[in-house]
Image (tube, rainbow, N blue to C red; front, side, top):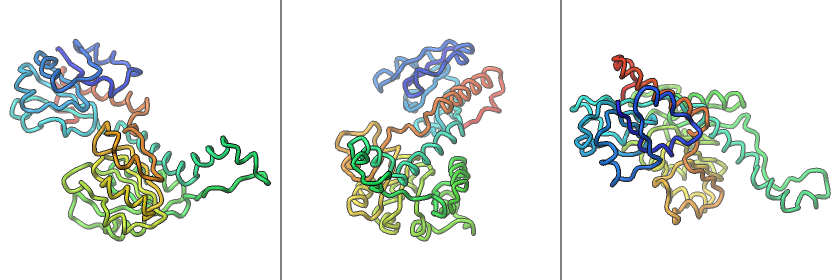
Length: 315
């Protein structure tokens, strides 16, 4: 079968595609624009895409299309209903980045609470050399033990973050479910959850219900010493309101790996905010996670080609 990988650069050039190439005739492109996509998919029987949109129009053009492999867990770039009408199988890959994202979250937490960047900056600028004693106490160093780690989105990643937090001796707080209306005694109402969390980390999908979930009202409920982390999706946290909360010292620090528009424009309001770490949507991108992702895609193709499609992790 002929397969087309539309955005190889999102997976990286350090991961081998050999397992996929052994199963089909693969054509890969680093990036694909809206104008280029139609010509590139018109003869494809298999499409592999991370972020390139495959909607009704694209499916009409790709008359031979039988399988869409999403190189991610989220599949909001695929028109699932249209695919069903056309008997096109759509597959994604789940849980490949769990440890990568959890590690990123604690990278943020340790960097912030240990004041790593500020302290290292001071040393490079000669402040330790001028210290009258053997140490230097210019910045806060706050232990994690006994702090409340609040988790919004208690799926696979949220649970892994909780496991690591417990190793540090943290108290785990879980927000009420945003997907299930049934209450649970183990979960806190959002207001109480926000008021108690020392560190808030978000691991829920972006939906109509979670869009702007954390805005001015919610930020004002948080402790002034609180840290907010978003390694889920841009749009869950209102960027203007987060900027204002940091400027007005309504929370102490934030770390975000995702923005509403990616790549962002130079005038994104968060670039002007104090006490924030911004990384370019890399929490999922450890070498090992991307290896698991490619292995998952290869397995889905194998299952489809061997007639075991019912075993594929279907969207």
